[in-house]
Image (cartoon, rainbow, N blue to C red; front, side, top):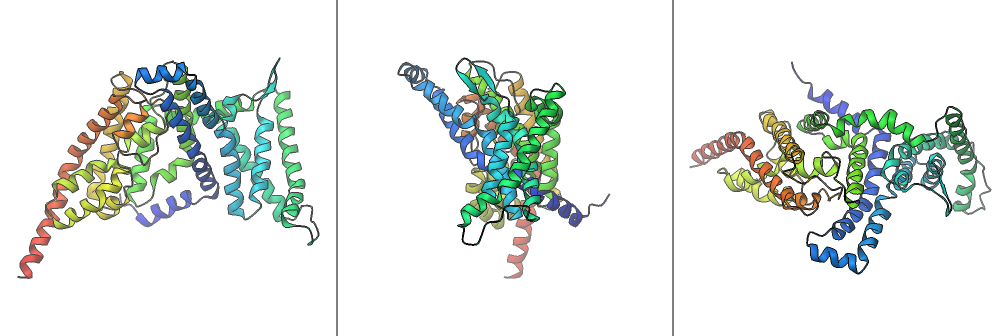
Length: 424
């Protein structure tokens, strides 16, 4: 069977450039700083030195550290709703702030209200990661309808003498009113059908089936194989799968965070950190292992030079110098280690966590640029086992890569020797 590389690249390009997926990807990226900031506060509140942790609790700071975590993780749903609408409106070249504001209002309308003696309020869980899917749907649908009205000039037009910001505000009234009315009618229909919680409905009909890919070992292996497949053709695999899967992975991470803060056992092994910190050490294909081999074991001058150039960026998860410089991209000799290393790393890490030999991720989303070993330590809640398992998987990946690296290095060395002999 022959692969048509051009067709594969064209197909993947269409997926990664699809406007709704781009808006979703950029919207999630907008919320990532909040998630990382919240993770830092959580790690401080649960510092591994017991005396320090007790001191924080004694002086009353622990409660505020946990509140800071909730203040960041707890509004992710709101932020993503606004950001997805904003970025989609940017693509359509329509008023971004109005699109984001209307989508945010739609999300709040669809979110159930809690009533108590203290007054009414929204459940924090739905304003956070549990509200992601409703927020994404509200943002995409609302912005599409907003565009429909704006592109057809079904708006209130103000005289040219009116300041632009005022004119924009008035132009959003008709589209915004239509959108909010539409969601209001949908909410009433759901209520008449006995559905009181739109978030629960979406979770059961969309999020739950998709979670097979992000909560089970076979599912995450499929995701890894898809990402590796696209990477081998020079396409950023995470950008193809990320817009759909990353909200689910963040949801798993947040479930672990909530359990960890409550002093309970964390429920999920497969989280955002599991995939991007534990599995892909050094980036796509677990190329940290290859970077170490190229840096320390190269005989050819070409690979020695590449090793010096690539070891630093790969240590911070920037794999491109090695992916395109070695190369592993479009180098079908490297398919076996490039795919096998992440699969083996996934199996080792998953079962080490499953049997309790290694601490599960606690929901602290570590920046993807954090060097391996440090990332494992932080993601597991400042546990040494998280660092050790990364060392083990990097060593195993080095064994997988070694024969293929050696073959490549010997060929380059032989060519260099031939060139040197001809120049004598």
